[in-house]
Every structure is written in structure tokens, then in C-alpha cells.
Length: 368
Image (cartoon, rainbow, N blue to C red):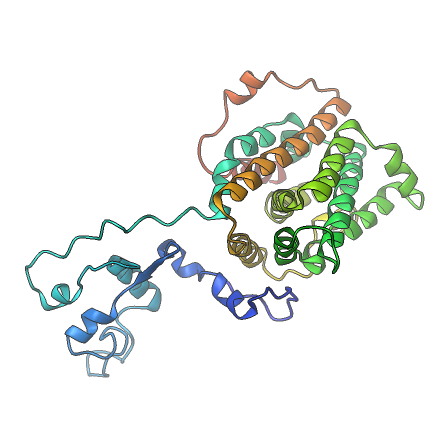
């Protein structure tokens, strides 16, 4: 299931008892219900005079060993057909008794659940996500066609970005912060310093590549794209800190997803020793990246933002992708590659699926 692993130190929300219920078991994810919906299967059982589902407990006979005829996962799928939304007056008793009377119509007040923040972010950033995936530098990286100098310059830029993001986030989460109560509460819900913070890991990588004087080397590599990115983070922290959620979503979940492919590529393509120069991609305090990402997305939904605020977060997530594209284009320039015209770049974009999935396949072929 998608439960936190033993030893994980995820911080509690204001409703710690609810965290375990935030995650949907992986075996039944396709049947997860939307907000405001519930499955109703008690009525058919009661109508049939049963206290429990007959398929779950089967008396031992000569022809069977007493095993369940239907597993819990399968039963969950069957129950999905008994989906009943809150406020519905649909009767299920007639179904279980075999009555031929038509079921009562759904009340006109029943409506589809509002889209969650995680869905709005995923859908709302698809285009810019594809654009980031198509930058020449990203494609060259995934094919092991970058050298150590380009890689360390990328790490230097990311260090300045993460140092700003984590410094501002920490300050807002501190007691007595000048941020609004809504913004401070939202950032506390999504702050996992032990699990996610990247500043210290990047310091190790930069010390490996630049040596003891890495701080001066990094400051010398500050670039226009880096200044724009850091400036945006600092401006949001001062004026609209809630929108920092978009930057954390874009960077951290990306590091836990496509970043893991980049780690393998960098290690092999640059002939790096184990964990030398790739600490940035290591998340030692996270037992299962998949489970953690599920928890993080559930916390996003748990912010319960109104639609206007959610839309602003999505808009800022697009801006965060643009900031990262700016960094990638600088890498292109350092590699001597002129960026393709936007129209040409968009002409061969995939239309469905995660854009990094295709790059992962390219990386697998490159590693073979």
C-alpha cells in the first residue's frame, strides 16, 4: 500500500490522524472515488439478509479450501459499480432483490466534484512541461552528451535557486512570520526539510567539482537566468508567499521523478564515482519516492484553496517552468547551441502522457 515507511519523519499537519487516509492503496487506485463520493454496498447486503459479503468468507467444503472467491482488490472494483454520490436518492435494494422497477433518477442537485489542486497543476502545466522537455540541453543530458563543466554549471545555478527557495520558506514557516496566516499554514503543510531540502546536498556536489573554494566559484557563475529566478522567489516571499507552493511543486516533484533518470545518466555519462557529484538527486530520508509523492500531492489537495487561489498557483507553476527553461537555454548557449524557433520546437511534441517518459526511454537506450 501507499503508507509512510517505518522511520520516515514526515511532519504532522493540523490533522495528523488524517495523513494515513490521504493515500489510496496502489492496487485500487483506478477505483478511487472523487471528493464527495462514497460507495454504497450495505443496502444490497441487508436486503439479501446478509451481514457480510458472501464472496469474502466462504465455508470450507470438499470442493474448496475456504479461500476467498474474490480478493479485496477485485471486490473494490465490483463495488465501484455501486457508486453513490452524497445526497443521491438512488435505491439499491431493488437491484439486490431482482426487482424490475427502474431505479430512481439522480437528483438534479448532484454535481461533479471540483477538480483537485494536483489535477489542476498537472493539466495546467502540460504544455510548458513539454516545452521544457524539448530544450536541446535536456535532450543532450538524457543522451549523455554533456561534459562535467556544463553539468557543474547547472548545479551551481540550481544551488542559488534552492538556497533562495529554502531560505524564504524557512523564514515564512517560523513563528512570528509576517506572511498571512493562510500562506504560512499552506507552506507549513508542504515543508519537509529533512526529506526534501536540496541546499546541503548541492553544497556537497559543488565541493566535489570546484574544491574548497566552491562558494566563490558559484558566485562567479551567477547568470541572468539565475538572477531572474531567484528574484522571482524573493519577490513572491515578500508579496505573495502562497505562490511559492508552485515553485516547490515544480522543483521537488521533478527531482523525485525525472531527476532520478538524470542521476543515472550523469553517473554513467560523466563516469562519476558512487554518490560523488550526484548527491543532489539522493533523497536518503525518503523510503519510497512513489509513496512520498502521493503524500505530497494529497497535502496539496488538503490545502483546500478556493478556485481563484488554485488558478493563481497553476499560473505561477507555469512561470516556474519558464524559469527552469531559462536555465536550460543558458546551458544551450554554453554548449554553443542556438535554440530552435518556438514553432519548430512545438511541431514534434507528444500530445499525451508524461513528457519525461519519452526521455526516460531515450536514456535507457543510451545506457544500454
